Image 1 (cartoon, protein in one colour):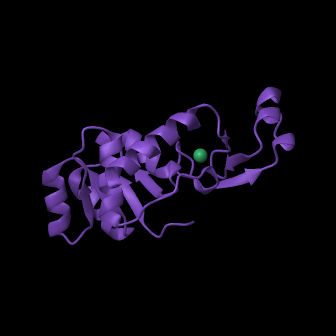
Image 2: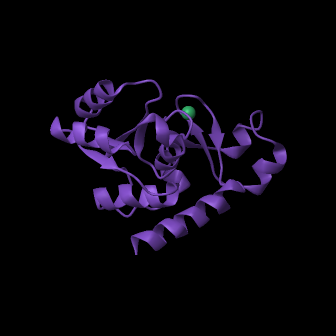
Image 3: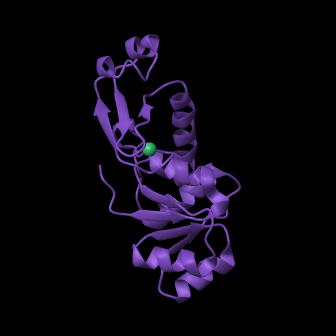
Length: 160
Ligand SMILES: [Zn+2]
């Protein structure tokens, strides 16, 4: 599933930006931008600004931008706030993910053809591999996916 919603996440919420990419959302992470630059970029690229700064949220809304002020205590609560805002209940699926590092699109690759970049044991153990079209990093549903699934369960708990 390709979502037609795109995000711009402010500097305070880097780990949230990565998670939104893993869920498959086109997400820019703005490390060094001031408030006006953030708002301008969000509006010009039709991105929803995600911030924990209420003042920035107000400024963005007053200029006609779309903004989620995510004030939850952790990424679980914050991402639930984002999903509630867009009224979407996303599915965690590695074949739909974007690169958490650079936001590039991923393509499925044959494990036997990328044995120079992944350990042999890994190639044997997992079936599906995905490569970032931009930075060429390779992903598979390794041990960190158990944590992501647990995270996803907690998010669903909040969404009810
Ligand atoms: Zn990448």
